[in-house]
Length: 248
Length: 248
Image (tube, rainbow over all chains, first blue to last red; front, side, top):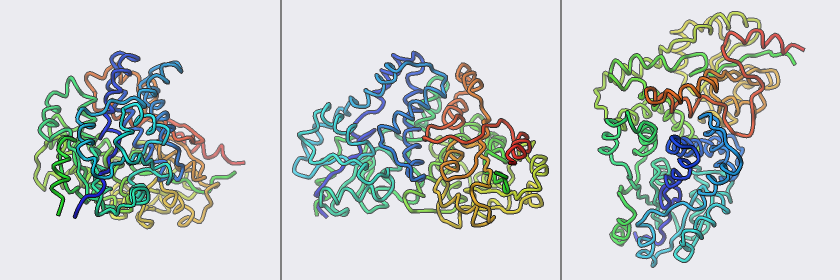
């Protein structure tokens, strides 16, 4: 089977969401890291809950609501300007360092993003990070008014790129996203960014890095959802070789 | 509006899921609390993810998968007997101390549980805790093969009890559950078990109680889902007066 399209999750996969921590730490000294962890967890929770409740709102709304929850639950007072400055960072996330060269190495395939992000968020992010010229499409689930892992979200790949699931390689660092994409019928590579060994080490050190440890324990290891991705890689830079090897 | 039926969430609302910590601490000294926190978060995550993925499995399966994830992510080796002993505690959870007297005070209304739990789990739990004789029904979402907060789950109340949503008071300590029940059209009382003041205090103390703090910051405060429950109470014992006050 030849891979005709390579499709990427955005947040946590091509873009480093931890790069928000600099802003949150600056705004709330001592709370920078726990804010980013809780914010991310609630952002995903709200996307799933709203999908199930049939009360979809754009990811930009969910992201703001999750940040509002986070600051309130931590008892952190803030003004509108601070809130806006943190939110704005979501439009200027750092690319993982190997993202651009990897995409350039794969330019003979169709390349796209499939993300929960709303079109305004994704278009700004792609433009600000210079990925506009290497991507064939930036696909937002917003068209379906439901978030991943609803199958309707993954169906957008074929609808937009006209490549059937069996000829698509989907990449995500989010275990649940990788599992759901596989369950849908896509070929899937999961980026394991925190190895079990690193996780075990974080536990030993948990007196000092507790919120990050809790987050890692919650969200970085392969999930138990009755399905496993096809490939496990550790960096985006491994992808060109992986895609070539799929050529039959 | 007269309240004709009072319907309760089970886990965390009538039953104290933290009562598992004694067993997990005994099995894995030093990890008792973080296991219960991660386990609970993953249990709910998996119920939402499987609902969205259209890959429903009974809550007993999801609960085991979430525990397997938790122990693996923390690098904790275990044998089958230990795993089984922890799981078994879910059938023998402690009732909150004021649960039974509250239910007895409300016996002139229809009383029921509506829970994500599978029928085998719920029936054992209700029997083991002596609630059989005070409840009119123990309703599992299993009949719909989808978990809360899908509206189909809340629709079961009317289907089983024959009381319309406007005459039902639904009680949950889980903020997302309270919001979704309200969005569905039920009257809802949310039990705020951790006040903002207690949450703020936990943050100050977070060097020593970090996993619990993280959990509290994630799951105990009212959510931002665009809808709010009708009532906010702090203990089950407040319910008889609240129900009487609804009489028009």
